[in-house]
Structure formats: C-alpha cells, structure tokens
Amino acid sequence: MLGTWIVRFASNVIIMKAVFLLVVLVALVAMAMAGVHHYKIPSGGDTHDTGHHGGGSIFDTAASAINGIL
Image (tube, rainbow, N blue to C red; front, side, top):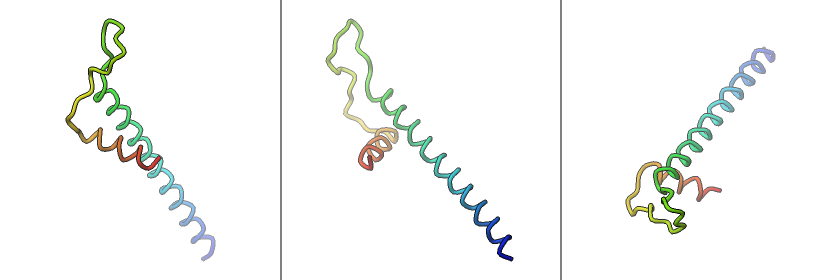
C-alpha cells in the first residue's frame, strides 16, 4: 500500500517537473520571439532604436509578464 503510494507520488512529481519545464521553455521562446519581433537591428551601424513599434502582441505581453516576475 505504501509502496504504491510512493510510486504514484514520484510519478506525479516527475510529471509536474516536466510540465513546469515545458512552461518555462515556452516562456523563454516567447520572450526570444518578442525580442526579435519588437526590435530590429538597424543597417548602416546606427545605434538608435528605430525598430521599436508602439503596438503590442501576445509575445510582447508574455515577455513583459516574465520580466515582471523576474
């Protein structure tokens, strides 16, 4: 009885860790996509951020949320 409970608990912990890792990876990919989408590297060596836009996307929202948590 106790052995069965331990096996079930251990498998649930592994599943929870896998789901958490998946969520973290999706969040990191979303942040990377938001960075690529939000900023463009200007040509000609100009360092001024000309690629910034005023609109928001789901990726921008995800990046803002993750940055707020961190």
